[in-house]
Amino acid sequence: MFNMFFRFKLLIFTLLITSGCFSISDQEQLLSNYEKIPTDHSQCFEDITWSLNGKKLDETGFTLVSWNIYKGNKEGWEQDLLLLSKESDLILLQEAYLTQSLSQFLETTGYGWDMISAFRYKGIHAGVMTLGHTPPRERCAQRAYEPLALLPKSSLVTYYPIRNTQQTLLVANIHAINFTLGTERYTEQLVEIKALLVQHKGPIVFAGDFNTWSDQREAVLDQIIGDERLGLLKVEFASTVEHLVWGHRLDHIFFRGLKVISAEIIPVESSDHYPLKVHFEFISTPEIEQELEPTVN
Image (cartoon, rainbow, N blue to C red; front, side, top):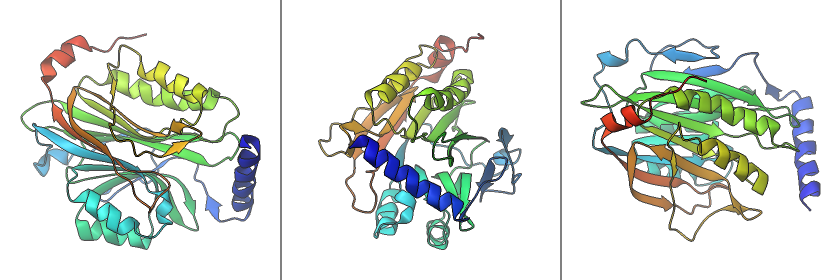
C-alpha cells in the first residue's frame, strides 16, 4: 500500500511540474516585509537596521506555534490562524503559499514575516514562513531538492534579539524532504541546518514538519538532534490528540536554553497537520554559553 501511495504522489508531482505551473529559480529567494533585502539569496543576510526599531523579544519568554498550513487549501485556515496569532509571539508555517488571502491576513494582523520561497506555483511563492512582531537580526535561507519529486523543500533560520541580553534566539523553521527511497538526501538537509545550530551559543528552537513517517527517518533525526554539541531537548506533548502517518508524528519542536511552561497539540480541520503550540521561558543563558561553546571539527 505504501508503494502504491508513493507512486501515485510522484505521478501527481510529475504531471504538475511538466504542466508548466511550477517555476524554480537557481537560487533561494528570501522574502521579507520587514525591509528590503536581496531578492535572490543563498546564504545569510544580516539586517543592519534591526537595532533602530528597538524591538526585542521579552527576556521572560515567548509563545511559539509551528504549523503546516497545507497551502491554505482547506476552509477555515484564516480563522484558525487568527486564533493562534492572538496568543503567539512567533508562528512558524510550512507549506505557506503567499496568496492574496494570506497577504491580506498578514497585513490585517500586523505580523512581520520572513519567507524562503522554495518555488513558485502559478506565480505564487511557496515555502516556509516565520511570523513575528520582532524583526530578526539575521536570516539564513536553505533549500534542498526532492530527489524523486524534483521540487525543493525550504528551511529558514532567523535570529531574534532578546531584551536585556546580548544573546539572540535562533529559530529554525523546516519543511523536510519527503519523497525519497532512502535517507541520504534527508540526512544531508538536516546536517546543513545542524551546521548553523552548532555555531550558535544562545537559546534555540528547531521546529517544523520533519516528515518522520518511518523508523529510518526518525532514527536519522534522533541521531542528528542527539549530538551533544547541540544540547537540544524535545518538547513532549501530553495530548492524546495527534496527527500520525503510518504511526509516526511528522511535526516536532526541539529546544535549548529554554524551559517549557506549556505545550499543546491543537486539533483543526483546516489542514492535514495539527498546530503545535509551546510557551517557553528563557533560563540562565550565561551557563549555556559556557557549556555549549562550539567546537571546530
